[in-house]
Every structure is written in C-alpha cells, then in structure tokens.
Length: 274
Image 1 (cartoon, rainbow, N blue to C red):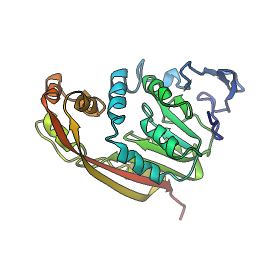
Image 2: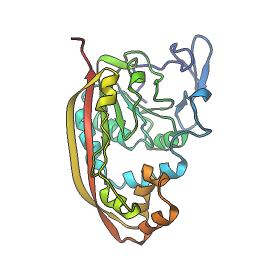
Image 3: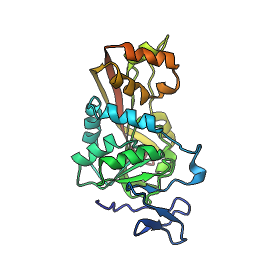
Image 4: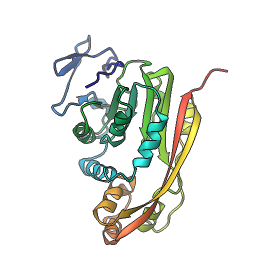
C-alpha cells in the first residue's frame, strides 16, 4: 500500500501516530489496532451516537450491489475530473466505490477513505488495499494538520468547521449533492406527494470560511431494472428510513423504472481575507 505522506494523529490528543506492527501509538501511549481486514479504527467511544453508528450492513450491501452496476459511473467520472491534487481524503467514503475509482484514475495520489460505519469500511477493504481505510469521525478527521490537498464528500452532510485543520493552505473541498429532480420517479412511487427538493452546501460552507469557486451540474436518465436492482437503490437512500414496508414492496412489482439522475458538484476554497 502507498503510505500517505499526510500521516495520522491520535483522535484523543492529536499527537502523531506511529506504526508498530499492526498497532498505532502516539507519544502518550494511546494505541489503536489495524483490523485483520486492513483498516485502522480511530473512532472513540464518545464519538459514537449508537453502538454501531453509520450505515448498517444491509444498507452497505445494497449500496455495493447498486453502485457496482455502473449506473452512477458518470457521477464518479465527473468527480474524478475535478480532483487535481493529492493527498486526498474521502469523508464518508462508505463502501469505497467512488474512492476506489478515484484511486484507479489517479494512482499517483495517496488516498485515504474515512467513514464512521465499520460495516462500510470492512466492505471497502475488500475493494482494494491501495487505499488507507479509516473508521473515524468526519467531524474532525484524525490526520495531520494542513496535510490534505483535496477533501471530497459525496452525499454526506459535512461539518466543515472540523475540516479546516486538515486542509492544506491551498487545498480544496469538493462536494457532490443531489439536485431537485434526483430520483424523482422513484419518489413518486413511494410517496403520495413529492416536491422538488435539493440541498446546497454553499451557505454552510460560507459560514465556515469556504467559498464556492466552481459549480457543475450533472443530469442524465437511466433505466433501472425492477426487483433487486431497484430495491437496492431504494435501500441505499435515506428514503429507506421514511417509507413503510408496504410502500417499499411496490418496487418489487415494477418491471423497470426510468429515473432522472440530478446532482451538483461544488469546489470550495478558503475565503481569502479582504
């Protein structure tokens, strides 16, 4: 594995971590193990809101099945085209689909994938060992200060105040979020009433001192087969938690569904003092 020049820091005291076999230790002797799958668990107990935070195994498996179909490949390609400097940190990397495709396109960059879900990171480890995988909090990533040139975040609520310490002075944060028409046809199946809704990270990022310097919209249409593929798509979205089982079962009766993919990519840099 390519070792990141960025290094890791202890999530308790923020001193550098040094590897000793499969164990990582800081000068104050806080220690963390490398799991047999290859990831490093740097998630503290007080950073957990539940026993197993983040996506559960069912959602991870659904995301893996759907993303490996290639339907979201244009999103991955658009993201990869925007990344032009490393090291890279993928916040909320999930099961690693986008992270792995970035590594394949940009093998010269040291890439770290971070997620709070241990189930997700275990799945990511199955994809490749050429990426450093971390179970950790994205609120304040345990990486050396000002060491990351590009932070990426796809479909994950960012806590930008916690990213400032990690981002290099000339670094960039690239986000991918849903547009107003994203999966509209799926929502029309599972809800009685549907409104065009989208999320813009721009105001929240501005409050944290980051300005949008680039915005790219990506829309395209796909047809998703009914049955397992459509159910996998549903199970990897937040709609899974909002819809009754009876509503979700309607997806099993559909032969196929034409869907609109609608996402927006932003590039952010630090706001310069005027």
